[in-house]
Image (cartoon, rainbow, N blue to C red):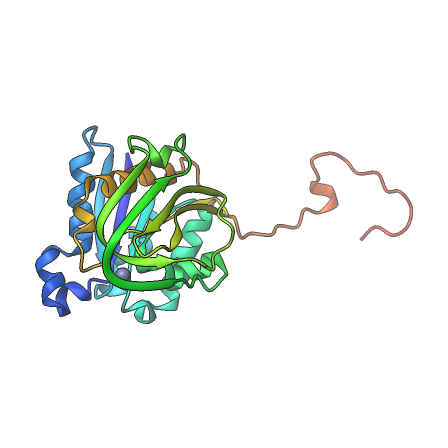
Length: 254
Ligand code: ZN
């Protein structure tokens, strides 16, 4: 069983009529429904959390019970409390998977974990995007053909100021000519991170079956079986506690 929490700031849906009509249950609700539909083996336990909930819905208990966290944010990155960012970061380092979607590239948690500005070029013109699979053997690309076509999207273009991805799964081409590294993997501590580009709030991206399939695959990929809760602990091992006896070799022994 993989325990998934889908986090969404849920601001556009309530403030913009178009987005509210597109995602009446919120972007988090659409992703939850989409993943649930794909989960024929009932291997996922799905939950959601939003910004306005106490502790943004990401309490110690919720995070302790989360194997993979999905993150969607855009307008309200600055409203996410630093203490919660610290808590999510710690869980990622211990082994919780993190999937950052679309405008989450500027979220506090993603920039914290990347350590770079994570900036990019952008344009909103409803243009076509073609996501090329550049690593067909990667588990995140399983069941996806050579490419995914999205008829109307917001453009994100290079240079994307991220650390060099450890694994590259998708590269996007846009109608206007730009390209973008749109499916990227990293490890941080014991945790696995996947950034996936599609998902602008004014287009029905999270109803697209291939986009949902990629997120589903990424959830499976990011779920680590082992946890490393003491990853930040720096323990001193005194001479008399060494696994093997240590003979004094002259000089002073501290
Ligand atoms: Zn957007």
